[in-house]
Length: 199
Ligand SMILES: C[S@@+](CC[C@H](N)C(=O)[O-])C[C@H]1O[C@@H](n2cnc3c(N)ncnc32)[C@H](O)[C@@H]1O
Image 1 (cartoon, rainbow, N blue to C red):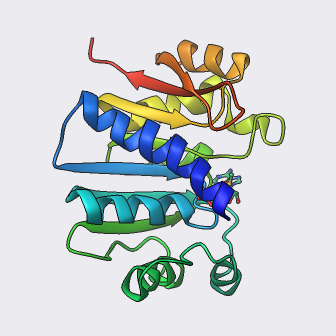
Image 2: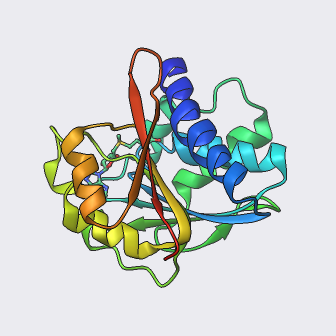
């Protein structure tokens, strides 16, 4: 779990959330995560909001939920305070499709649906794109899916992913994104951020 935590922090917190806020400072952001999985990214973002004072309206999409009892065994919240660990449990126990305030600054909604067809009412400042790789799930890395993601972003919004595959970047560009490579985690050469820039 330590390695996964370090990778999540590198990709989604340091090169995602913080990198985005350095360019577009805000007091509140709305984030969409594709692939809630264990809840690690959501939990690290909650901790970041606690420490930085940032207001976060966090939405996550998941098609195949991890059962809460399995999530607890993964020890994602190990080493954190009792109060912080309780927030991690509440993320998993919370009902689907309902918004909950988990702290003064952090609101959380999880959507039980397919990323490909997700059409929320809100738009987002930042998308954490954490689907399984193009080799495992090619249907989640197409021009069409990135077109949908582009439409879900606010102007000057940003998508961040651990992936750096060439075909993925071409699909992002074809969907309208401005694509930039950043240093990947540990031995990985690159990761990717992609912007919806104002015209
Ligand atoms: C790499 S894992 C995500 C890890 C997660 N972000 C975390 O912090 O633990 C990818 C996730 O995408 C989910 N998934 C697979 N197909 C999906 C789809 N079509 N729509 C939404 N989620 C999907 C999987 O069930 C899995 O939990």
